[in-house]
Length: 495
Image (cartoon, rainbow, N blue to C red; front, top):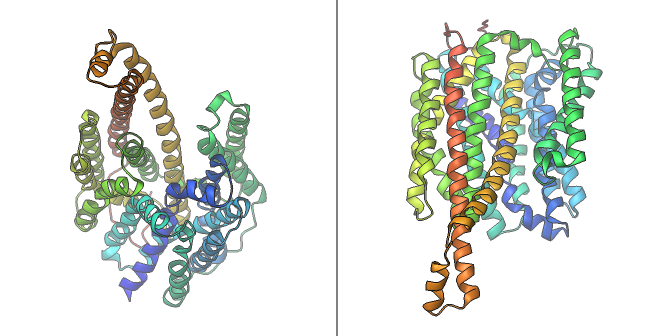
């Protein structure tokens, strides 16, 4: 029974994280099928991210007000219902609205699946619980594009959303039967309306900046400038209000724990770097190496495959968790440095092997950081702490996606301009091609193709160097946390 309950909770987290990336490869098909422009199609991704970003930090308040199990079950069932409505959408407007509601209902699934996992597992199995949950968080973003590409190629875009429904609704109803005796008594605190409004304002504004910045040329757009000002002012007002509100909608007081702070910062920086690698690799493979979405997904999937083998060992390790995190993140930094010498002649396994080697490090990074973070707060704060940790992790992933894709595109353009001035300066390559029988315009196209390919390759290696530096920084940050005096277990508090 414990295994079945764990499976349900892990599946909830898996589908919530999966839906951050599964629709990415389907956007062109969705836009075409619904008669929308490609720029409108990207709102399918943005709308889900906005909805999720709103409810993740509210999880602690929802759990206290209505009970963690009840909130989890309702969120699961609603996630399934809105997934069906997404799949049945007949216009881009309807799909975007349904994706917002899908994100709103999916937000609490991530933190609550984590804290409920800790409640149902015996005290001596808490590490295993965190291990199971962590693996779904790390593997789902990798599986998303593969599954999405397969569903779009072999079926229709509708199945990208419909596939969630039986899992969400079935497991949601099953979870209520199995977990209802873990339901805690609700606490009827006053509702912090001002805090909620301020949260909505700055989170929505920031998410729109991150998602639409690249399309609108960032701060060259007055719209992005205005949204940035709203996000900054709204965030400042939110902080001031919540820290002085007696019953805040988001409990920021968990940041008084040094272990929680260090873990969350480490997770945010390292996850941003990891997400940057996960976004950049398939982008490079599809743009310059001639890979299909499915083939690119299969290459990156090796990261998750190798992680599964190491996770049980890390989950049951008795070593200082800070040392495990340091080792794991340092390993990821070194593998990323290894990838900075990539070239355009690499075969599938030349690309997949470094990613598989990186996968061995993922459990060392993610499992202990979650343990340190939740082991540093009091039991009554665990839902709020998990919500804030997942919120900041999700936000760091969105931030990494925007920055990495923008820097990569800009570097590609810059490298292309430099290589044009260096390549075939005397015209000897073009002349050689024309002498071999190629028409002049074909010879010029061949040279330009080579320059474009190498520009993309160079920019990929340059961005990987920056990502490696982020990993090195994250590895150092974890030592700010005090040495944990115990493992996570229900009923254990900490400061």
